[in-house]
Image 1: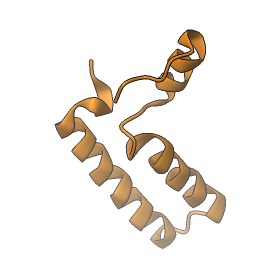
Image 2 (image 1 turned 45 degrees about the vertical axis):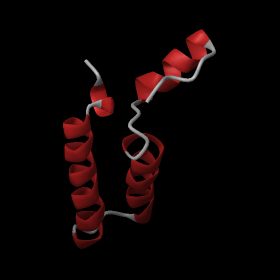
Image 3 (image 1 turned 60 degrees about the vertical axis):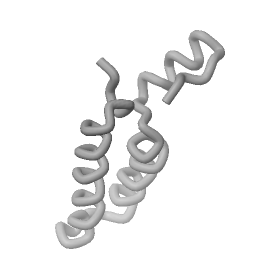
Image 4 (image 1 turned 90 degrees about the vertical axis):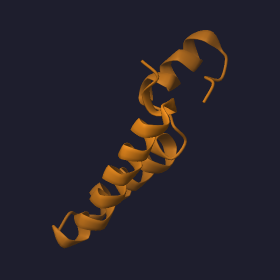
Length: 66
């Protein structure tokens, strides 16, 4: 219900994305894939957001609380 605003879920997501970012070069992921994952991590995971927050902000004109 609270998505990444939940502290335990946020911690789990950060751990998963950190592991993915570390593994991608070893797995031979191309630079554009590594960049896309890093950008998603910065834009959403690190800020406790999800893509739906962008849609809600567009619809309401208000920033979603963290």
